[in-house]
Length: 82
Image (cartoon, rainbow, N blue to C red; front, side, top):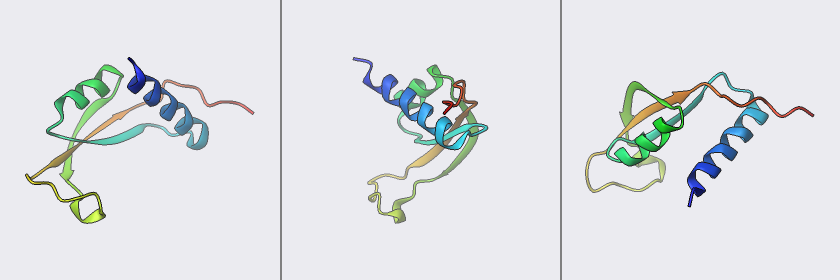
């Protein structure tokens, strides 16, 4: 229904408004190719960097070894004035 696109656009707008970042950065579970595809269709680019899944950070313990991939993009939204 397009809810994911709406939520991502809102999160990006809020991030730009609050922090005025040079780039937006996220980490996605490498095994979730459909999520990586979703974000790349919205302008995110794989950086080539990977990291271990943060299983010690209270996010649960995966049953298989997971890695995170880093994606980034330059904000294409202008900060909200006022």
